Amino acid sequence: NAGVTQTPKFQVLKTGQSMTLQCAQDMNHEYMSWYRQDPGMGLRLIHYSVGAGITDQGEVPNGYNVSRSTTEDFPLRLLSAAPSQTSVYFCASSYSPHPRDIQYFGAGTRLSVL
Amino acid sequence: QQQVKQSPQSLIVQKGGISIINCAYENTAFDYFPWYQQFPGKGPALLIAIRPDVSEKKEGRFTISFNKSAKQFSLHIMDSQPGDSATYFCAASLSYNQGGKLIFGQGTELSVKP
Image 1 (cartoon, rainbow over the protein chains, first blue to last red):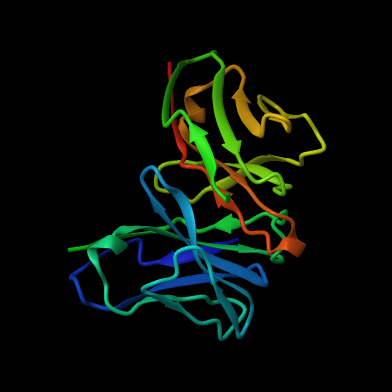
Image 2: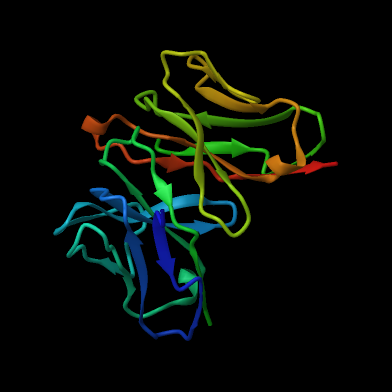
């Protein structure tokens, strides 16, 4: 079972560059989400999706775009990277949006913006 | 207030000792309180969770204690082992009908010394 797969594991960008963080799940989960993890701040929700074609903003959406064309994939796009976006990014999925459904997390993408 | 405050930031415990991590919240509408465990280089994984109508939940060496009147909940790890060394996050959420999304605490880095 692959679960939630994130690529790449590490990335270094220069300020102003764009990139896409990939996330794929093979559990047929409807709900997918992106978090960023920063020291002393826990995990904060960036964007989420309750199904293909449906996305919405979380707590810290500025500077990020998402789309959900299939159930399996939920890429996160940084349009113009800034040093403030240096963080570890986690993708998660669950069977439904219900908060009591277990969220399964990927292994993360560590991003540095210089 | 949507914040969840977690303490301590880091914790060192001897093998066989009890590890205690505390969380506090303000929003009395929160109705689900999970704990996540994260090993280095991995994504968080659900460890144990509790609802506010229960004062304690135990799973093996892990126990959540919940104090509704004090708006606090804590994780106790009995007979702590070096394999328990990880970062622990508490979280809270509103009900699904209230748009419940997980709000995470700041995290506690636990180190269990042999």
